[in-house]
Image 1 (cartoon, rainbow, N blue to C red):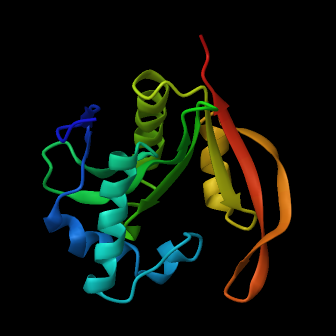
Image 2 (cartoon, rainbow, N blue to C red):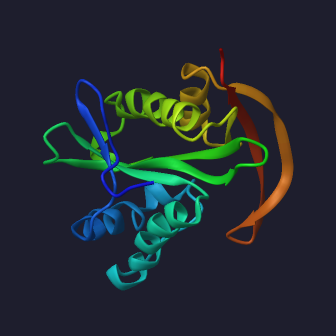
Length: 177
């Protein structure tokens, strides 16, 4: 994988992260409405460097690829999306996504997620892309359905978050010939 990966649509640019994205990543991953259903959060710019390093390490290790999701002219940062927990042996990965709240409800996720899936299927050779969604995250579950991810079931009380058990709904998209 090289350092110039970009995916474009009519209005979006998905590109690799750059150091100057750190403040925007911090803004997203410290916002209570975003981190409510996201697996991590940060309380400082310094701590956010951990996430920036994770984006880079995923690609280096071949275990995934995350993109900064931006306007086509690269002037507006919307959020991030990508694939992680990539298994070459099983030809699958997990999709993840978050948007800054100013851009919720504007169709960005609906446009970006298929680009990420196609990248996984076509460039990474995946057969299956999985999504694990907290059972009470109705917005994300609705989005997964709209994007043709199939609901496969619920893992009840499978993780602890903020001292309480949470359940995760499993969604998948299988590559079609």
